[in-house]
Structure formats: structure tokens, C-alpha cells
Image (cartoon, rainbow, N blue to C red):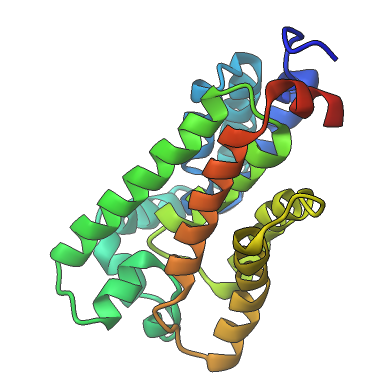
Length: 231
């Protein structure tokens, strides 16, 4: 394939992709970065379908349950540091950057500010990947990792999203070095380890950050012609 050929993008099936991405709004804290990635990638039709899908689901929920749940959600979302501590279960087990900082003794509002800074850097790193003519596997991996890093409230079961970066890094099996193998192993092990411990050790966010850093490096180092040929 020629390097000048249009690289593969969400626009292969933009409407279907947008509808699927909009469905992520059932967990808004994990979907908040989706529009930013689509803007960075200039995927306008997919963005329109994403917005339509999310609004449709929101409208359906209001029709079924009224506006009270949305009012409660927006009230909590306005204070990220209160989201974790108001959890219906042990907030110490939330494997987010915010809770890691709180577990390490960082008080409010400093934990919230530091979490916001880390979330912004993760979003910018993922947007840079989406802005490049990068393979879909790296885009999906970056979005999954950035979403988990940015969310102030996540649970171990949300780490199912790590299937995307694991698959992306595994695709380099013939060129994998110790960094690929180590980070891939940590991405595999961390959810099970956190689940077994019951309370979050200050490792989950660090593994996510390491994963995003490696994905960004690998995505930047793969030639466009090679990406086209493998899609």
C-alpha cells in the first residue's frame, strides 16, 4: 500500500461507530472523552451520530424515570472529590487517581486538582494519537486508557476496557520488547489483583498511565504504510 493512501478511520462506518460510541453514555464518566477524540480525529459524521445516540438514550431514560436521576447525577458530577466518598460501597476500593491520592493522605481539594491535571494530560495524549493517521487499534487503546485515567470514579469491572490496549500491544508480538511484555502483563494482572485485594492499592492508576505512555510511543513509531497494510 502507498503511504499517501487515506489511512483507515472510524469513517469506514461512521454512523454505526457513532451509535456504538454514544451507547457508552450509559456510563457518562467513561464516555466523557469520546467527543474530544472524535473532534481530534476530525470524525464529524461519527461525532454527530454519537451525540444523537447519547441524546436518544438520555431522552429514553427521562421518559422512563423522570429528571430526578439526572439532577442527582449532575449534582454529584459538580464535585468530583465527593463522588468517590459518597459511593454506596467502600470508596477506598475505587482504583482511580483521585482515590489513590486520597489513600496516600492527600487532602481535598488538592487531590481533586492533581487528579484533574493527570486527567487533562491523559486526554491530551490520547487526542494526539487520534489526530495522527494512526491505526484503529491504537486509537481504541488510547481512548480506553485515557477514559479510565480521567474518571474520578471507576470500579475494577470497568477495567474490562483494558482489552483494547492489551490487544493493541499483543499485535506487536513479533516486535515486542521487554517494555511491551511487562506493561501487557501488568494490564492483564492488575484487575485480578485489585479484585482479590478488595481495597485499591496505589498501583491501578500507575499501571494505566504506564500503559498510555507506551501506547502513545508505539502509535507514534509505527509507519503509516505499515498501519494501512495491516488494517
